[in-house]
Image (cartoon, rainbow, N blue to C red; front, side):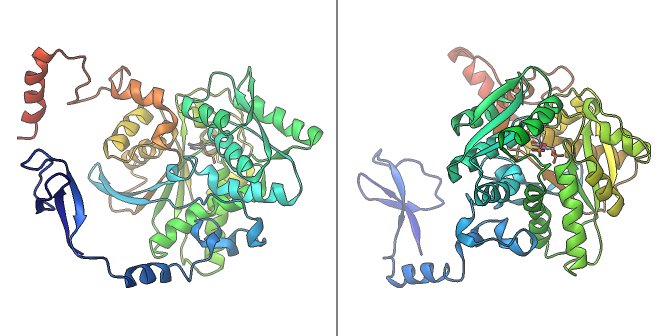
Length: 420
Ligand SMILES: Cc1ncc(COP(=O)(O)O)c(C=O)c1O
Ligand SMILES: N[C@@H](CCOP(=O)(O)O)C(=O)O
């Protein structure tokens, strides 16, 4: 099929790659197909879809053998799990980013929520509930609305990024701001669920984790089941750590893979109870009062601790902690790659840097970094970071200025001189 640029005013055509934006006559240009479309094109197009069942569109239900046996027409799906794997070079090392922020509500939670809300509906629940640092509430309220269910979300007051709060409100959740932290909200919602017949959909719910296993299955399928050396992920309530270990065990037992990649779980220094336990060979576990700029992982008493320990042991994994400045430095770099993510997801790259420095991960290793949340989730942090307002994370070679017309020419000269 031949495409050209065509003037909508005089009809003159130009080569598609001519770099013209306007016709010589001053008219606007549009891309035009030169040949007539053949009638068989539609048939070919429709045939391609024949072998696909609707729920194959979901990157969760496509792997239904690993997820749940349930009637197809009862499934609540958006569909989720159609996320990209990006190959990039960072610090001279080739790495893969699996971007779970590309899910319908902008985080990996959707992979679990499609299963959780499907089951809530099947069981006849009318109301779903969760405690949340933001993403779970966004996902829960969206999927619940799709299923015609009410939702109640318990969130720590003032500690939820704006993108996430606006989602929960927009999708119609009943939002209960608790004057405490996530861990306390988690305790409250668990109690309230028993008392008020709410279907609890935090990662404490084992069915939700069955959906989250597909992050691993999907990623490995994209790699033709060639097993990487490392999978790096952020650790908060430790649902993913638990689900990933379970997925790898099942893939191994069903002979999809012949070796186990190592998990590296990264926590923010101010919210690192799992890291502290790891350092102590998991002999003891001490919950902590959590504080970090990465609000999604501002969790001091992860509910999945015991399952997560099993995952680390099964995969010969490691747990590392990184500072908020290291997280923001990494976020800056991931954003600048044109991929972008929310702060907690950037802990993966910060963790990789630390693990490389300590000699645990080698440059030649194959590494997957799981980006758990979309860049749009926390616009306040992105704007502060990229306008140089964060003291220890300087921004190089960038302009963000209030500019007079007089200075415009000089500034444009400076910007363009950097590439000449
Ligand atoms: C964006 C994001 N990344 C990471 C996490 C931590 O994941 P997990 O609780 O499964 O450890 C969360 C929430 O828990 C999150 O919302
Ligand atoms: N970051 C989470 C915290 C709750 O985790 P969950 O996986 O147990 O729901 C959030 O987005 O709320």
